[in-house]
Length: 450
Image (cartoon, rainbow, N blue to C red; front, side, top):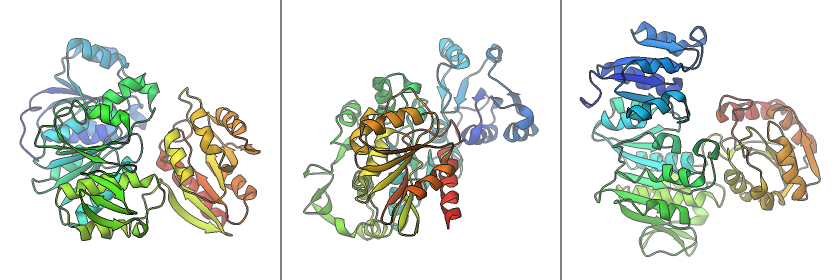
């Protein structure tokens, strides 16, 4: 870990634990800070808080009392999911106390360069593709961020030979001050998380922060087919590296004569790529661009693209039962992700969807739903999705209590040759702690059918 004095002898409040807060607390303790931890979960049910208290850290659990701000704090490290409307954060901003996420902390404690990947959809797949390409290319990559491994935990042991490939959410990017990836990637922008950001404009601003601290020595890999991405990147100083699935470019990553090119160099025939779905071409082009920017050999890129079939919970093939194929796309937590999942198949689809109600309707999903044979719904948004299904002309619509029941119902409705696809178009938090939990329940229910 790099010796940084930025946080040493400072009084810091960790607001919200989960994995990121717990990891940040341990890192900051090693840096010689004075810590207070505040978490919503009651202390007696909170193993992380109990462990931190044993380390000598002051812990306040069971809510977010505003009185905690009577202490003087030099920084607040917030859990990305806690909104800025939280009274503690409102008070901190009024007082001019910096509010950061652990990604900013990670940046200060390591000499390693970062590759930062963000976008509304495809972050996990692209992050994994880049990591695998760099690994086969012997570039000493580490993988971190919103993909499941906390960035500051990874950064703690990284050295200057490493490259930290980091998936970043808009929530995390709102809490940066100096964080500057050597290579930033913005895949796409779609109306998402508006319950958190309020407006699409504010959401775009949050995504655009990935570029704001870059210099002319850095690179910004951008999807030039998405006007919001192009707009978000305009203020950045990094060298723009475009990618496009629709245009044959002179530079960057693009498709020509049914092959992937970077600049004017042919990398691989499209037919050799095993990752399913037209929508994954965006992710592949972005990953190829990044890999080439760090001088990854073509053989390493080709090795990954001819073997990588996808990540868990993201259009993940589970199994076939009586010639019905089951796919787990639990990470599809918004409409665009589900649209792309549906478009990946030519077979008849039985779609399992529903989850947390964020206030939006599903009219944007209707054009894709016309390709769906049957709709099995669950969760808070079941009624809204049923309305969209009727408008799309779907005749078979069923509402059930949960994902497990949806699997059984979908199988009963299916015929040989059908695809049974979990792609919820909603977050999981109405019934599950995470989309991973929801996906695992789907997988287990499918295997029970056998």
